[in-house]
Length: 173
Image (tube, rainbow, N blue to C red; front, side):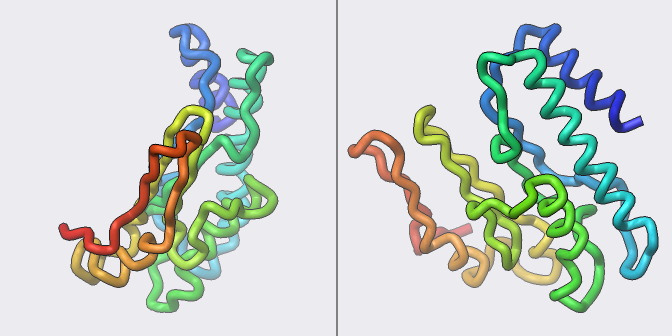
């Protein structure tokens, strides 16, 4: 039962003295297994997954009412089970995109809508989360120049004027 699982996770966080967290990072595989195009249960799976994370968020917030999280404090990086395996690239991201829309309402601007990689900063804490999308690398060289180019224009300025982080255009892997 996803709802009781979310409640148990939040209770464990609180029990272990970890309340007052400022974000949740989910590093892939929101979905278990591969959904097929045209399957009737896809909307139900998306509804269950979004409900799980909303319950988790609500339960965490009930344990830390002075510092509540908002939906934008939950960051998702796609995993290999979060896409639909198809040669039609336009449909590949349907499940993941629909999940993000269901959870957030509107997909936050820190997501790259072409491949759902992300760069999310928390200026107050001088922290930046960068999520590289490994779902796109199956049939090509890991971190090829086209993939790196998607990050070249991202530049993140943290609160200190002396600290500037960016993705250099000459990354080599």
